[in-house]
Length: 459
Ligand code: URP
Ligand code: ZN
Ligand code: ZN
Image (cartoon, rainbow, N blue to C red; front, side, top):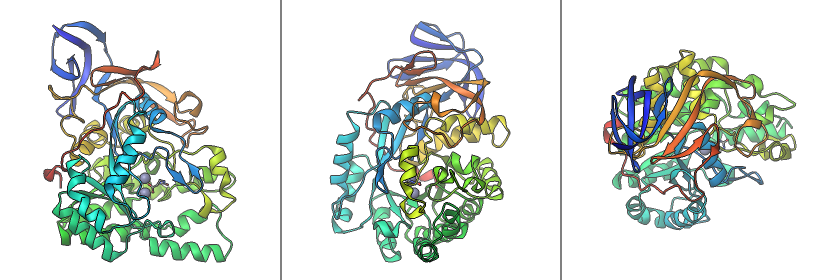
């Protein structure tokens, strides 16, 4: 007799759904099989029983252009759990010339009392210096096996130049640390932005003009050369364009150790929205792209050319966004997304944009493998953490900011008819969210996950 059995579900097993029960003892999955009995049983007939989603790219309480992203680690956890997310990976923030360990302990101290689901952090740097380099082995020993760098945001002091890219990738290769990179050519973007400033053309239409697709493609090609040369494994965050995704795959096929991530905003939103009066509410970097780029991106997902979908969750309120003074250079960039994330990806399965296998891999298994969490996270294998999303594929719920938990007063997807929704989320065997009662987890109940090195077989 098991402690808890989810009865009669459609369980995601070896890349497809099978009719089965899923049993849980304590924090772990105990068995997947038929006719299992539990002291507690929940009937999940007609529901898909999926591994909890992993959002490998969130920004809780991130300062940006004078505002702070609206979700903190607690509200973000609740919103994530409501959507079916059981683990997220956020970022540290380097102050001045400090090392990665100082920013790690500061960010952990901020997160630990608040997190309601499990989490990890990418170490994030703007300045690569001797202290950072010396601390890389200790960083990995603390379970932080990825370092985030930027090829853009020159004006905020975050951008790495080519010489620094070479140094940081060589060192990370040596210490088994995965590089995650914001790949846009910051030099060109800054030049185009300066020209737009001089011309007095900084309205929202300037966002895609100052960050054209080729700046992403060029940066992906360049980082690929550094990855190939150094042997450092590189994960490109928020690939926004089909051209970028296709370039990444071409480089990978030619021996570059690359993996790519895209986000729901690049799959569902397009640049026709970037017009006055409200287009600034859709402002993010890289910007949302044209419809043909979006179509190509879906194709790259369907074939597995893009491995991961994450959110880049960085929500601002209308009031925050409205401080922009009609200048993209003063606009808090980013969109809310953690709560709508698994639902929008699975909606793509219903609309036959990608298979269920690709969808579940992109939101659970692949991020777990790439970020050293598999199989404890990202699978339903007996013996691993019982992180589960119970998903109803047969309902239609138009997206509405008012019915969600993210601390923002608009959704970029407002009114979008999304088929299916998460009904219940279990974190390590405990129900942390269900549709009838809402949030049932605990502030501080999430756990910091010490990650292993990335799965070399993935690259
Ligand atoms: O617009 C975005 N994406 N804001 C968050 C920061 C980043 O570049 O990921
Ligand atoms: Zn970025
Ligand atoms: Zn981001």
